[in-house]
Each structure stands twice: as C-alpha cells, then as structure tokens.
Image (tube, rainbow, N blue to C red; front, side, top):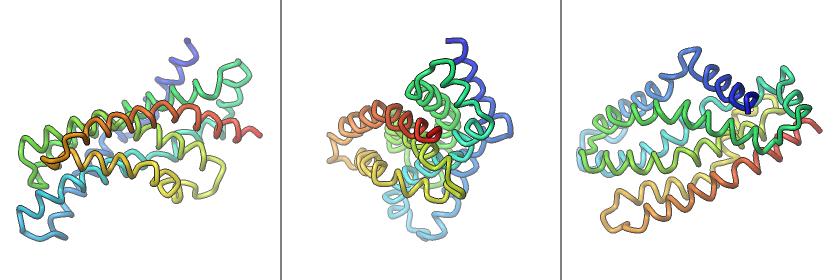
Length: 215
C-alpha cells in the first residue's frame, strides 16, 4: 500500500510540478477564445455548437500529457521494480488512472466555467456540462492511460495516441453532448453507463499493455 501511495503522489507531483496544473485551463480558454472567431458572431449558433466543442476540448485535454504518464516510468525502470515487488500491472494502471483523473480533472472543472461563458453557454447548460464532465472524467483518464501504455514503446507515440482511443471516446462525446438536448433525457444514464464500463475495463487493458512493454 505504501508503494502504491508513493506512485500516486509521484504521478500527481509530476503532473503539477512543472506548471502543468494550469495546462487544461489555458487549453480550454484558448479553444473558447478561438472557436467564436470560426463560428462568427451568431450567438444562437455559438450556444448550440459550444457545448460540443467543450466535450472535444475535454478529450484533447485528457490526452495532452500522455507522454509523461507511462514512458518516464518505463525508461527509468520503475515499472520493472514494481513488477519485482509483485504488484500487478492492473493495480499500477488503476493508480495511474486515479492520479491522472485528479491531475487533469480538477483544472478541467475550473476551466469549464470561463470557457462556457466565452462559448455563450447559459447557467443551465453550464451546469449540465459540469455534471457530464464529472461523470466522464474517470473514463477519459482511463483512455489516456491506456493510450500512454500502448504507445510508450513507440517513438512519437503521442501523435497516434489520440487515434487509438478515439473510437472508444466517441460514445462519451455523443452522450455528453446529448445531455444538452432537452429531448435527450436518457443521455445522462447512457453517459454514466459508458463511463463506468470504460473505467472498469481501463485498468485491465492498460495493465496488459504494461506487461507487453516488459516482453
């Protein structure tokens, strides 16, 4: 347990120690600032499209740091040392998922509110977006760690990391954006079910990928 806590705090310090705490905030604000220039001054159109853009930005924010999620531990032999101590790869992956969910999830929720204002989202839509993102953050973190584990042994792996998990992330984007539609009453339940499924599968899939790095 002490080793797993040390791994958790190590990942969290690595995520926030170099100023990366504010990276999702800056990324969200950049998207929220640039998108209205592309859409134009049509406020109703911006309001309708802005919610979907928030979800796309959330996915990209989760994938931004995949280079530092697994590869540094692989390069310095941390993964090998944990394996020698008998810690299962699935447990290592689960700890990394929790650390990443906190590391990017908290700044993401902070960034949502100014970004939603820039994207002409009213209070009700912002509340729906906040609820949806809170449900989806564990699944987004699982996809990011899985992508990091799959690409840790590849040069320039982060460039294809998003492509690997995009098919799995599409349901999150569809159901998350669907929550903003007044007629999409079941979208929250479908989002919750999808997020739970991806969160449960994530440690096992990423653990298998971590074992592959040692073989």
